[in-house]
Amino acid sequence: MVSNHEAKLDESDLCHVSAGTPAGKMFRSRTEDLKDIPLAVKVLGEELVLFRDGQGKLGLVGLHCSHRGSSLEYGDIEEKGIRCIYHGWLYDVDGNCLDQPLEPAGSTFCQKIKHLSYPVRELGGLIFTYMGPEKSCPPRYSALIREDGERLVLPPRFWDYNWFNFWENVVDSLHAYVLHKDSRSDRSWENAFWRYRGDHHLDAVTTDYGLQAIVRWPGPAPETEYVRLTTVALPTVFSLGGRGEEDVGFERLLFVTPADDNNFMVFTSDFIPKNAAHTIEDREKARRAEAESEDVKSYDKRQHVPFRGRVWKEDYVCQSTQGNVGYRREQLGTSDRAIILLRKLLIEAMEAVRKGGTPKGIIPREKEADMVTLEAYRAVLSKSQVQELLNGRS
Image 1 (cartoon, rainbow, N blue to C red):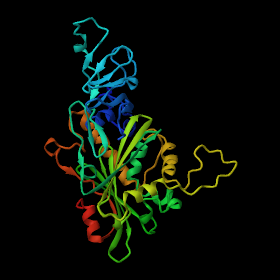
Image 2: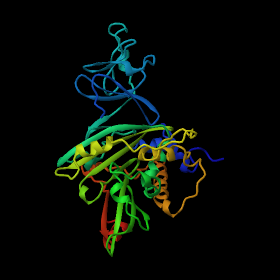
Image 3: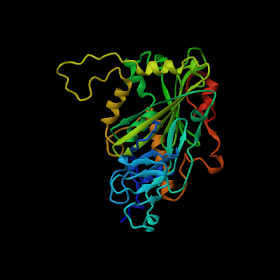
Image 4: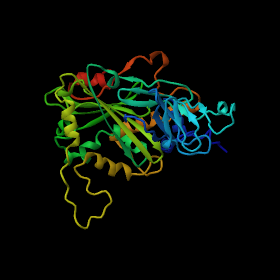
């Protein structure tokens, strides 16, 4: 009989992210404005509370008090930490118990308590944590640390299906040509490129940090091609470029964070260079614009109508209804080669962690201070430039 430890990993393992699962271990190999109110969060199946103490230090600790389990979401923020309102136990940002007011004078019981905590760090308007066995810093992505422009951190989005359905959609670049073709509007960041018709090809190239999905089709002149490049860094970071050549230097970085097996969050940070054609105000106006209304027949009782004309909801309808990878029936084709590669790389990453190795996507300690750029764009390239891209040289 083969033990669970020895069992071969497959695509179904990508759906489960709790502590101890292969995918959960892989993830652990890696703002909202916080004021004086604790924020309950669920990440990778763990219930936590995020807070900023009276000294301005960020803390991410277990949601339930180590004493008798009351929620620290309702705790009081103090100078040195967060205090449970039930019996007054006080925890600092590192999970140390500093005070137990109902214990006898001189008691050292608090010194024996070590509450669950994770290190956190602010970078580019977002808050990062590392939930693995060793301390690590978040990669210094260029979109988060560049100073030659402005940053726009969008409100987080919360979704109620498995994270991997969304994640593999990132490299399923050709779906936009079919699913969203009737919703190409001036408010869509895809509009400037998908209006072109042609013979579309999708290629996938492995990189040091993950992969690149490359969509290309005949360009406006001989020996040219339209190219849409999307870059993925494992396990769940991806970069999208701007609307075209007028958006050179623009970066959109998205972070997919599983809450548990059935829910996830997406955090987005845009970097807009100085003198950009589209300002922050332009982008905010486009993002908030109302989609054209879709006529719904009176007898159409489907749960998610209306959905046509709303890019995010079109994606939601498809991704939330397809079932989880490894459990659903599917037949992949040539246009799915980036999805096939992504699954392969993630299964290899889980295997690497299970065997005590380092998965793809981890920044070596000697390079933790380096700036990491995840290239992404929509552009017209010469065929020689496209060939260099396909050969792994951008």
